[in-house]
Image 1 (cartoon, one colour):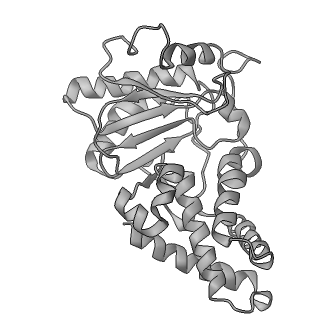
Image 2: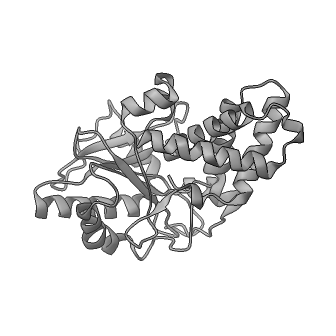
Image 3: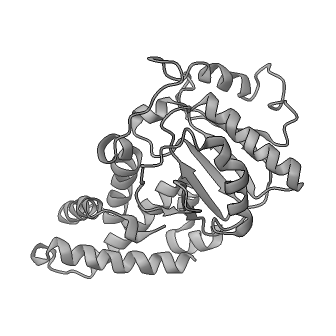
Length: 289
């Protein structure tokens, strides 16, 4: 997570939420956390950094995506595994209450070892099934030529997520730090040649680190024990592994601590409150490393 890559507008919005929560005797932590995830992170390309996504079939979004998701769903009659000499197992994330499967994420999993970092990227075209096939090609070729993997698993979002303002079309979970030489070798030699013509190279998300000189945006993933010690074990099921979840908790805790240190909040300027929150955010991040 990169505090320096958080625009002033975002700090202002979060400070306003913290003030409102404190004035109403509501929990500052949860209010700021929820607001960041729901209104900033999940709306980034809709409200803050708009993109012009071009669908694979003009005028139609996610052709074939729901059908493929239903084929991959547990209990379906489809052949187990993606096939095509795949080295991985099907990975699938489906949202509860989404029988259409438009929000389902599909990918492959290669290892049961814990992830230590992740990166994401956005595409300007070629999302959904096109990106799914390109990711499989890149990862499987790397595995075939190295007899191993630096990728724990990855997931691709359907094209409809571009309409909703999501700041990612694909998330890649890594077995090594995102700046490890083996990760950079995978990116430069395998991933980037397969996606460079469709990646949106002008998009900059909030709070993430650019890696490999590419428009790929990363954060580390704290161990579950460190996460639990800092944020509480109850957040593991709701936030762990999510970049937006991590940032939301950092911001929520930072503003909660900053508000506690300001007994007369009405007389404190936004600049002072935000400076205090930034100091606390940096402390929280250091405690997670």
